[in-house]
Structure formats: structure tokens, C-alpha cells
Figure 1 (cartoon, rainbow, N blue to C red):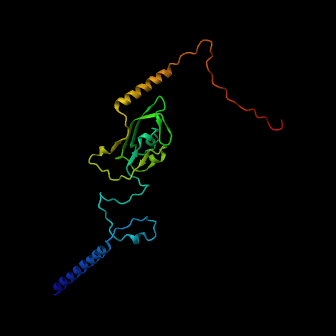
Figure 2: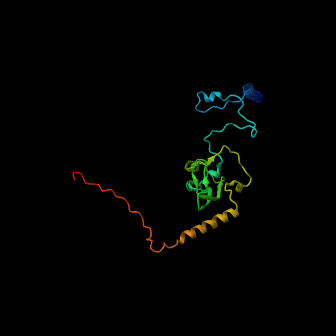
Figure 3: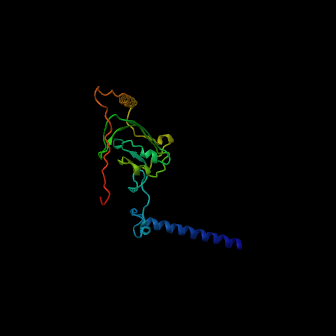
Length: 214
């Protein structure tokens, strides 16, 4: 008798549990006739506005991303002055730069900053990046930014190393040779003509200040 009572009790509990789950499912089906509107978490009643379809048809549809999000890095190499600040401040050393000094100004960035250094190499290893954003903060020309690309998974981690320099091997060799010749020409300065005194540094002007009462 006790076994029969336990048997029917288990059936009642199972039926009650299944019915509770079905009611919850049907309630969500009724509310899922529209998509959830994305609000800022600062919006009043944020958690009361989360009823509806929360999933999206990714990758054909994606949720809006914040403008200050930290995702994949990008360097606009035309605006880069190769100052090396980003590589120095990077806590994980994911930025590798090989600069070549130019013999003269080679152009200007979009904000008017003169460019005097070539970027023979500018690599960012996103496999090492900790997404701290420090490199974008110190960039003086704002050429280094974090994009909204967050899905860039690969099978080989070596593919996370992104090269932004556009110079070819021949260009690099030519620029290095030109720099060496320029440095040699500056090292060998011709002697001044006879009878002409060598140029000396201009004296520093020090104003005479009289003590008070004189």
C-alpha cells in the first residue's frame, strides 16, 4: 500500500513540475513576439524591460556595441609618426616597431603633425593583447584605435599577429642606405675657409638686475 501511495505521489509531483515548466515556457512564448530594446543599464527600470526575444541571428545580426569598448586594435599607418610610445607603455609587449629615421620630413598626418620616421615594421600581436587601452591613450595622433571587431578567432594563434607597415624589403633597404649616407656626410664636415673664424655659440643674454634702493 505504501509503495502504491509513493508511486502516485511521484506521478503527481512529476506532473506538477512539468506543468510549471510548460506555463513558464508559454508565458515567454507570448512575450517573445517582439525583440528586446537595448537600453543603457543606467536607464530606470532596466531589468523590467528585458522581456522579449533576446537572441540575435549572429553573424547576420549583431547587438550594438559601445563606442568605448575594447576590442581589436587598428593602426592607421598613414597617421602614425612612429613615436614608439604605444610599444613602451604596453604591459604585455604585444606591439613591435622597427623605425627608420628619414633624412627629411616625409609628410604630415591628418592633424598636421610632421612625419620624420619610416615604419619598417609595425606589428600587433592580438594573441598577447590584454585590451587595457593604454596604447590608444598615449598615441599623440590618435592613429591607434580599438575597433568594434570582437570576433576574430583563428585556428592558429600565429594568425593573431597583424602587420600594419606597408614598406617592402626593397624600400627598407633603400631607406637604411640613404640614412647611412646622410649620417656619413654629416660626420665629415669640410674645414672652414682660410681667414674665416669658426662659428662659436652665441652668448647667453643675462639681464642686469639692480638691487632695490640703488
